Each structure stands twice: as C-alpha cells, then as structure tokens.
Length: 108
Length: 126
Length: 131
Image (cartoon, rainbow over all chains, first blue to last red; front, side, top):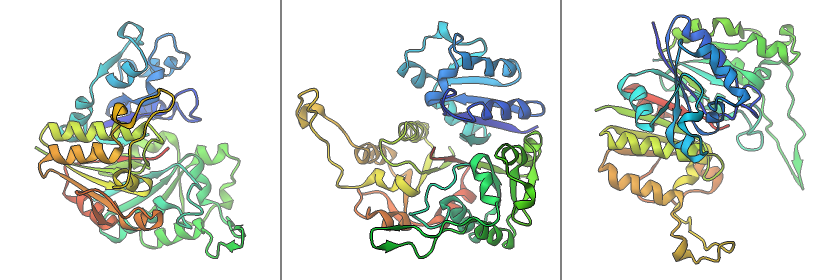
C-alpha cells in the first residue's frame, strides 16, 4: 500500500479541474493511504455551507482531510464552519508528512 | 531514481524559452541521471498533437527565429528513453483525435493513474 | 533529521504559493532538517539584492513606518536562522534571461544538474508548481 499526500491549492470555484485532486484522491484511496492537504484558496471548499464541500463527501472516511490552519484563519473560516471530516492542521504537520513519513507528495 | 513528471500548464513560455520550460527541465534531469517519465494532463494533453506551429511571431521589427516545436521535444524525450503518457479523458474532452497524436505517446485513463503512480518513486506535478 | 529538496517557480507577489513555500522552508528548518531550494523560472527573482521597500501612499505611511520586508529579506532571515542548513540554487539560465544576476548573500548559481543531485540524495522532494 502506497502512502500519498495530495496537496491542493486551487480555488474549487475557479479552477477548471478543481475537483481533479479530489477525484484522484478517491481513486488512490481505493488501494492506498491518502492524505489530502488543502492550502491557500483550496480551503474555500472546507466550509460545510460551501457548494464545493460536496466534493469532499465521497472522501470522508477514506482519506484524511486536512486544511491549513493559516489559510483558514486568513480567510476567517472557523472550526464550527468546517465540513464534517475536515481537520485543521499546521504547516509543521505538512512537513512531517513529507519528510518524516516520506509520503509521495503531489502538489496541485 | 524513477520520477513521473506531470505537466499541466501549457503554452506559457513561448516567448521565453522557445520551448516548454518543464519539458526542457525534465530533459535535463534525464540527462543527469533521473529516470524520468512524462504525464501530459489537462491542457498539456495538446502537447502530443502533431503539427503544432508557433511560427510567425514578431514584435516590432524583431522576429522569432526559433519557435517552439513541442511535438519534436516529446519525440526527443522518447528517443532518450523517457516514456510520455497522456490522460485519455483530458484529450477526448478537448476534441483531440488520438490518430492526430505523436507516435509513441501512450494513453492512460484517469482510472489507471494510481497504477502508473505506483511505478514511480516520486510523482511531481509541475 | 532529514533533508528536504524543494523546487520553486513563482516570482514574488504573483501567487500565494510564495508565502506557503517560505512557511514550509521555515518549518523544516525549525524542525532541524536541512533544506535545498532550486529556484527555477520566476523564482530567481525572490532573492534579487536590489529589491527595496516602499512607502504606502494609500495609508500615508513612510517607508520606515511600513517596515516592509521584501522577499529577499525574508529569505535572508531564513539563511540566518538555518545556520548552514539552507542551500539555495538560482537556475543560471533563468537568471540570465531575466537579468536577475545580483542577489543576496546565500544563494548560488546552478543548473538542473544540482537539482537532480539533490533529489538523489534527499529524504524528500517537493515540487511546488506555478499555476
């Protein structure tokens, strides 16, 4: 089983393939251990009231869904607004996933 | 070390390098000992189309004498032993006929990307 | 401790990626890792020595009041805190094309060859693309 880290940075509302990483994550998670780390404007998908949050639903329970704490804070997204299954994570955690855990990291 | 380089952003450096900067970089990495494969995704799927022609650019009194030849760059990479893949659905969505693609490029479906990724130690999205 | 190699492409202030990349370098250094950065394309402009802060006519503040570090200042600070654990290569051909040859102390001129060697010897490599 491979260990993957998919880093999504694109705004889900303006990127033509904003769902590409989530779709790839679903396919990878069928056989592999997958973490999806949302950074920058990708965290706009994490508000449960956001129409883009629906893309996260199929990943719930299959992949670990993390959202960068600074990107959330910068956009005023509170914990009680987060979609189910999404956890706030630090940039230190991202570095651990890459360096300590040696995950195959793919940045989009 | 096996590295799969995913190229997605296409045609952004025509006046700069007169080629694609990421294909060029990966060619250099191949020359320097990395076992590189290329996956064309999104708009970069069009890089595999035969007969691309970026000639004729001129600004003021200056003409571009060496326009990019992306299809030739792909052929050169494959000649060096670097496989070039394209995402079949991305190409189909853009109305590109597979018969119009450079010989030797290999289709892969989105469904099979995980298997391709498993063949490589590193997967980089450029 | 490990070694992290990063490829970086974006020029200053064009995308949020620059901020994120600096946060990642800072975090990795604080954790005790060594970090290699290969600055490709517009990223060679991040370390240009002649960057200068400016006053803010909207706020009516002076350059001193703004206290506005540019990217070269942030990167110089990373070099200071790294104590020898940060290596930074500016792609020489990218530098030449951009006339970006004057940079701060720390980065060196190099080529994809250095990047390839770093990849082979690092614990992890992170390619941070441009959008």
